[in-house]
Length: 182
Image (cartoon, rainbow, N blue to C red; front, top):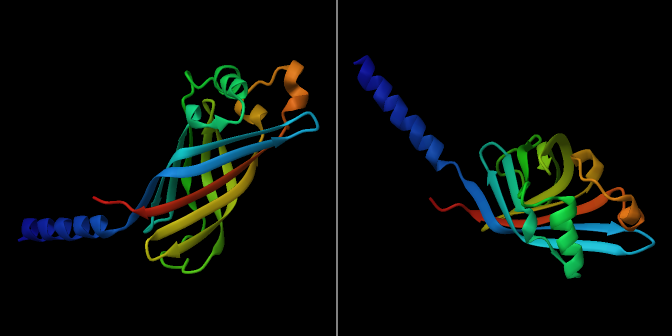
């Protein structure tokens, strides 16, 4: 009888785990911007993978560094070869959760804080990023704007171009997530 009860309990718990909704996109958007008196540098990546677990508030982002597109091809080449070394460090990731996440609490736009670990250029740092979450009938919209210091992630900027790149890069995230189909 005990074995039967354990099997029944296992089936019930696994069913509950599968009924939890996860939301997902492969075309999330991350943009970074650097403003200096010498020149502005801006790059967009529209191939960002994002997963949000609605039951727990766990959140993951993954961005291929080579998917950042620049206005000037030379900037893109320098970014990939000299700064982020995208052959050696192909991805930037964030793994964490939305602080105080409550399922169903985002029927309208809400201010939130994502906490977790941001990994860029092989360096992982604990971060807190402000953002906004809203839920609609077809998924979630996640937005955030925060700053990243390249030196914190061992990205070396040569002195010859140091004045062309801001110490802090402004990063903007904007992603619409739909239900993950199983």
